[in-house]
Length: 321
Ligand code: ADP
Image (spheres, rainbow, N blue to C red):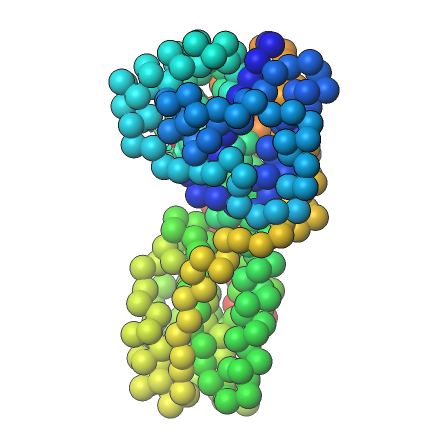
């Protein structure tokens, strides 16, 4: 391949820039022209490209968000949008595309690969919800950010003998809630993968720990369980007598400097993705498993199922009493 493009798509995640940097530098080092695509698949449809060189990606390894901007593009998921994207790639001589995003973005990459533009996906999502990967770019930073924010809430919660009900991100997956819950010693963790009953899993647990002299409580809920944390805090206060407050961490969780782990894995994955394209291999997802970087067929990857580690879930609840 002589010319490739790189884009970021879907939700942004810290470490995406480190992946873009690795893609650009690997391509340049191997004599491949590389375009940065602006605003995900929108840019691919409209030819919104920036020719990148070694210095275009200077000073971004440490930055959250994505310098290429990201977007959701409904048009790309239509036959006409897809045709326009293929035409634009052909006009610009783009022979392969690296797509950094989540599983929605990978569906687009699969469709584009099927239409003759080989794509390689790199998992970039804070939710860690890509089935073929133990780990996705942005997850580690987000987990650490949540831990720091909850620690701050804990200081005030503890000082007032209160209960804090905190909503963290994770629309379909509870990895962030479960692992930050362990890291922060939450009394109860509510995640979409495990059915729960507020009475049994929150109120009774709190009462049990109250009997063991505990006076302040952290309850973590993943966004995906669809709970109104303010209403839950009011309910808890009524039933336990513990003054309760609700916090939605919201977009504070998304940004910030990527952790070392995110930068290192993003760099390895970006490099790996270009090496695949250099061998004319497309329709693949780069994956991380047990610290190893490997790749899967996109179709196969999208059909894989990821389940929560119930052992971890049980450990969390056994310890937080
Ligand atoms: P994420 O990649 O974070 O999961 P989305 O699900 O929003 O984010 O997907 C990002 C973009 O990928 C969409 O805006 C759309 O352009 C493209 N996309 C999503 N699903 C499909 C699909 N089934 N077919 C083609 N393109 C898709």
